[in-house]
Amino acid sequence: MTMEYEDGYGQAQSPKYDCLLFDLDDTLYPLSSGIALHCRENIQAYMAEKLGIEKSKVPEMCALLYKHYGTTMAGLRAIGYEFDYDDFHSFVHGRLPYEMLKPDPVLRHLLLSLPIRKMIFTNGDRIHAAKVLSRLGLEDCFEGVICFETLNPLEDSSSRGKDAKTEIFDILGHLSEKDTGVEFPKTPVLCKPSEYAMVEALKIGKINPQRTIFFDDSIRNIQSGKRIGLHTVLVGTHIRVKGADHALESIHNIREALPELWEEAEKVEETRYQGKVAIETSVTA
Ligand SMILES: [Mg+2]
Image (cartoon, rainbow, N blue to C red; front, top):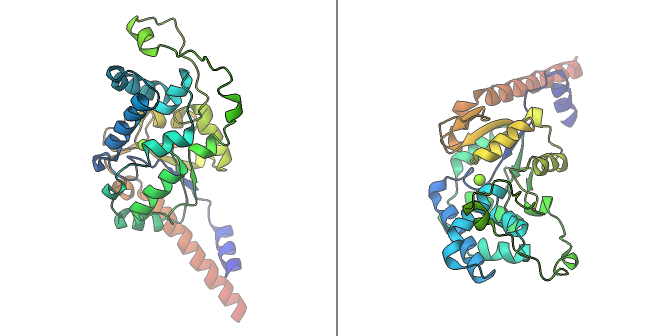
């Protein structure tokens, strides 16, 4: 059986794309699910309760860090807060109302009908990704998950806390002074939309950007993706922005927007079939 398939592939023209790379949150399920809102509330609670940030400053700071660093967590680490990543993730994601996410048989069918490698690339942690995929009924639709732990493995906690008096960079203060000359500190966390982090993720996943379609609901992630050579699909809006090759209101529209994926899949399937017939014929001859 395997031989026949390989022969079939050998004769086929190699398809244009060989990987589909999907963001998770607000991409594989809609923003309207409400999960994102709860997530933000939990992050803000963490900032106030665990890091002792003045409550009145939390919403603005949270938004600013998210905007500048890709995730609030990456921003908090950049400006000098010390905390355990697992502690943060279990606080922020551990209490999410995952029951708000429902199985999505339509998306499941779409994904399974494409014989192309499919991967997840999320800034979230592994447990969160597994829970979301399981709630959506998509846990067996992807070859692998590139997540927070993939890009930020085994943090050396011994190196932290040594400089006990880490000063906190006053990011709101710098902003209010309109002090454009000040450079914001760098974050030790690797995450989207950092192009460096994204290139690392592709290397780990053995993903060739030129032959990959990247789906994400974040404009910044899409624009970074475009800069590193990915084909890009902005999800959650029909308005195509600079850097997005396509824009989809919902991931459910993937077939209408990218019919060539299914056409190529059919071609591969046909060649497989022809290859099989040819072999069978030669065997019986
Ligand atoms: Mg997202």
